[in-house]
Length: 547
Image (tube, rainbow, N blue to C red; front, side, top):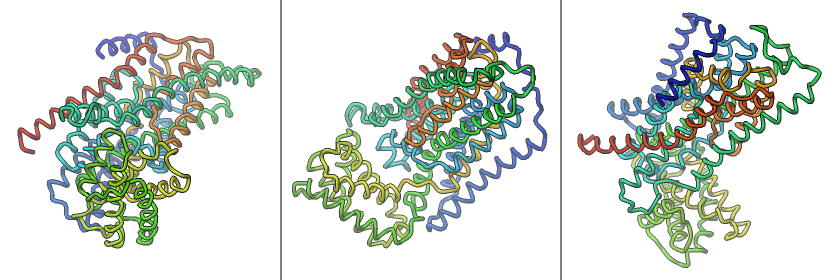
């Protein structure tokens, strides 16, 4: 990393820094920034107090303080994500003189905010499913909190390190590496008692890895091809493929296109990356305040009848495959936990366990009347049972040929009901994550912007290059958001800029490309080592000091 820092500094010395970065931040803007930061944290604290009191949960002062610390760290990840990743979105409009730097940053921050607020939540739980079953079921334990703190600290530290040397590194990559690190460390600490790499859901990890691999390749190839097509379609507008003259803004139509693509990338960055912190925040809330957050208490009482109906239908499917075996809830939980750890959900024993827990859930939910009326003492157990049944059923139905179409439809409806009861994100969580990501966009962006704008291609960015890179990046992130997979805005856009540079015939600065490739290759192992080491240290600290 030190070598990369020296080389980045050397490159910076070789290229004159654009005067566009000499703008001073107005004191009122700094005051507004501080007010929004403090206001967001206060709003989070107030929301937690309201939710816990509404659920009848009394939080001790120490637990509330611990929860506050955990939330600050999780929001710090999103804040760093903002100024690290979103710089990519504004580089093109800044270097084509489409928007002044300060205005571009505020503009991007606002649309990042909107992207978070309108996100679906699917990506949030794609990240969570990478975590070991132990953490998800026992998130309120010392090991659970150690995992969350370790992976967040590791992701933030790596992001800050790569930001410091001006490398466009992926926050998604860093977070996923951190998650895998604590999973493998957890497995090693358990001494392999649960079998090989059961600490990691490798089927989900493979899905995430594939998205991280193909997305930058798609960014490079897509931007290259799009620029070549643009050169043919707009050959009568040569100014589209010329570098800006001084600080002259582009023609009105081209300027609108560039601002539009910057807006789209910012929005979809928020909708995809903002969800990564949401899932971790929900785990923190479930661990510290299970009564208020373990179950979706906002569901109406009328949903209970529908849940009971779909549960009975799913129960019949499980019973038909259990070969008459019966199982008590305690043994059923152990069986399904083992099935998830080994990623094998098949055989009469598993279906007998699903039958037992689905029966138990029907009795509990119908007995209480609705999820909102589940008492504090039962909230964690109900949530864990719903999680076990949901994820085991999904694992079992990955081979659809074993089920008739009607059975698949029945189990899909049951999964949707279970997901609605456990996988939710309160509005206030979206708001505070949106504030953290949006505010993070507005500071610390210059280092990455200079790399993207000056150090990838050998010529100054043209209007066409900027538009091609942004259009492809926005489309790719939008597609990933629809599929519910995490991708890297940084990798997609920087690869798009590289592809557009090749398409323009300008060539690439191979020192920067090499350093970016090294950072890409180093991120997973470095984040894994950091998070795994921190997890081990924290667990030992808990044992030594009795925390």
